[in-house]
Amino acid sequence: MPRFKTTVYDLLEGVPRRTRGHRTFDAVLISLILANVLAVILGTVKTLSGRYETLFLAFEILSVSAFTLELMLRFWVSDRSPGTTTKQSRWRFWANPYTLTDTLAIVPFYLGFLVNVDLRLLRILRLFRVFQISPYFRSLALLGSVIKQEYRPMLSALAVIAILMLFAAAGIYLLEREGQPETFGDLPSALWWVVVTLSTVGYGDAVPATGLGRMLGAAIMMLGIGMVALPAGMLASRFSQVMHRQQDLFRRFVEDSIEAEGGVSEELVEQRRQELFISRGEAKSVIANCIEESQRQTNFCPNCGSKLPGRKTV
Image 1: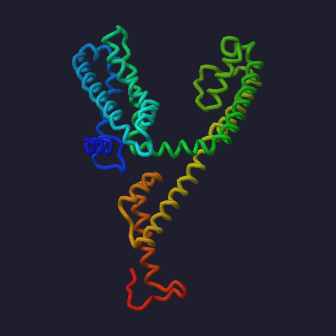
Image 2: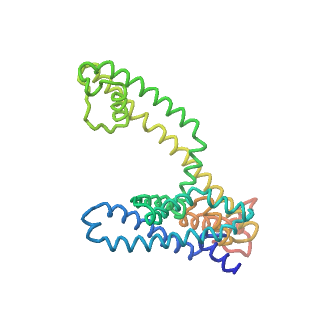
Image 3: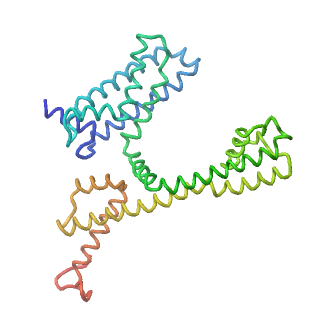
């Protein structure tokens, strides 16, 4: 039983590294999650829900059963988490936001037998599970770390934007309130117009009529081009720096492995690749370049650069 429990834990959590079985399990689970979201959306169409009511119900029972079994299995193997006691592992399991999301997504089905309230739309909460189990979305963790590092400059930029928006709203309110009281009769309405204009959306439902109002509107439009892009530019720049640093760390790891072991361990490289969010294609390219560079250096004298006798160049 302990061995079987460990096998189930490795399958669900992908520990110590993502196996083919774990990737297959993730793909099936993601497909089921997306199918549930699609079923919730289509279930709101009266013609479809009425015509295929039995099919929707059967799919819901199948999905809830699968998700309930998965949740129970994850709770069962949660004590296999390294470095924690059984009690700590159980608490961490239930404190995990994704566990709470999973629970909220399946509880409405069972509550339906007790209370006459339609809570099926809560199943769409399972869409958040995609961000946890899909390897494609693991890069979001890297983006999250970038946001944490840049949150102070971003808050400063957002504060400047907010101040400009308030001044612009006050200005358009003073200039247009008498001519268009139904559109700019209060500051919240003026602020809504400023947000729409500054974000370059421009619904066209509200347009300044006075000359000064149009001049202010033109100034807000010009500011919007640069101000809205400022936080995005800051994030993009920092994200690029972090990605280059991750690539350098991976290259250094490969070079150290080749120097110490004479080669690279596929398992260790795969684990390190996932930790640093390096794509497989990029990892293969780095490994090939490092091996080629290592072979080239061993065929030539490190001092004079001349070819060493008895060795062939690559």
